[in-house]
Amino acid sequence: MPKIDLASVPVRKGSGYPEEFAGPLAGRTRRRLGDAGGLEDFGVNLMTLPPGGWSSQRHWHSHEDEFVYVLEGELTLIEDGGATVLRAGDCAAFAKNSGNGHHLKNESSTIAVYLEVGSRSPVDMTTCSDIDMKSSSVDGLFTHKDGTPYFEALFSYGTLQQSNVQLATFGRLLTGRTDALVGFEQSMHAIDDAEVVKTSGKTHHPIVRFTGNGAARVPGTVFEITPQELAQADRYEVAAYKRVSAPLASGGKAWVYVDAKFAPPDEKR
Image 1 (tube, rainbow, N blue to C red):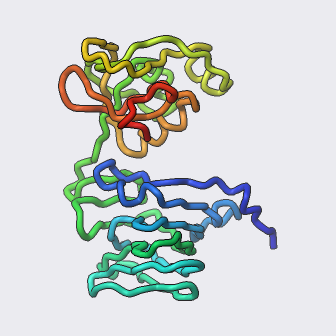
Image 2 (cartoon, helix red, strand yellow):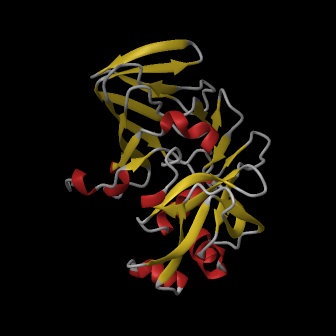
């Protein structure tokens, strides 16, 4: 039986939830051990939760069974019927289509580690108990319970406005509106990632730095994208860029990728 090299399994932090629901999961980490071992019928994830963290929004699955086993620390299981403390060596099982919304909270003062195991169904529907959200395994999109999608506002002043970059990054062309970023100035940055250069066709990309000058404007386009597409945009941008929430000339805010060395002091992420 092949041994999985744990050190080589990527650590994924946070969640793909819409921003308004993602906060309690920001510190959660996941290593997809089942994927690393080539498993197809069920997933096995090594999870960590910091103090105050949540495993997910409270939810239940229509076609997938779930199982958790606590390895270290202490977690509180929240279900329709109330709260149960789980310590190292404790486990819990959640049958598919139970309608019993559940999640784990770390209400202790130390990091908790647990295994998360679940079957995989191409027709599963995840329904959240306490918020207006669901997600189908058919496309993985988070939507309102009436099927209306959630969107994130992303402002681009650079290559994400290019049709070839949009197709390579999102698999579709985006529709946007013109706007301007407030309080930043633009320059150029040399790209040393060969794949990104290949995608954009350019060795230098625009980059903006925060100045705090309320009269400064950087023109660009605001796009509405899904949380999953926002994660794909994160993977496209190189390490020199930081995603922050920044003000627009039209009012409100949008996500934008800025110079990581000159991000707004209160908006770094």
